Image (tube, rainbow, N blue to C red; front, side):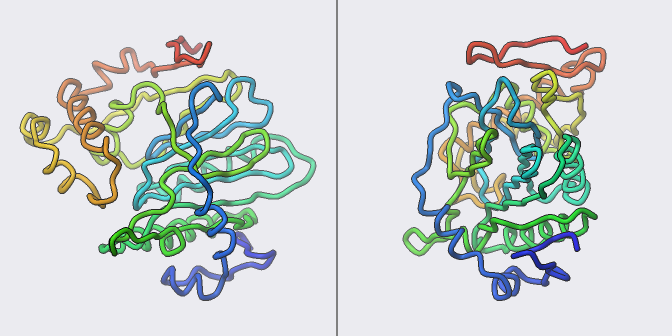
Length: 307
């Protein structure tokens, strides 16, 4: 019985998120999370930031990082998986691409750390009542992906779609855009981040060009952030796209234009320029097939070589 709520197997995932919440009550825990003040996390605290279509796993013994975090989730879903015995914790930022494989991979990596007992606990946050129903669709896909894993997984937090929805002037928005998890304690909070880490345009280019795999970006043994190597496709009329005005970028390159953060257009343009300047990243970015590796030293990212 892979996915459990209140200690009982859900049997099967309902076809709609409304039916799921009719069956299982997560209102109280979701309200507690939504009503929190949004914590601003800075690199002074040792943050490992996870971007869209990325994941990372570590343990309380991590000597460099104290927080796993991600934000900018509109229709996307944030996943936190923790083993209560080993304390190993993983975070992923899902947009629907590569979901079944990513769920299995996240569970496998969290289970790699030895433990004499305990259980896997799952926390889901993200989405809202968007007009196109993309959040609701992703909610069901995410629940199905973890329900398909062979291990028992206890769903502890489910603040997704309708429970993460808030209206501003009668327009729906996500209440929570970002989440931080304390690596030492497993505590989860509503959060924003001052630093998204190195190589952001390169990392963002992947999900603009159809690269579906959710990549593990962290080696907890050596405390190294690893980017790539990976390929992405170029885009038709990339020169034109790079010069598009901000309103066009927001309207046509987002699943939820009204709900995106103020810096959305700048992030997209930087990713497009990355694609334009490096249409074949395996040749010009990841030279000799080597990844970009970084360590956090004195609160700053430093490029390193990985043996």
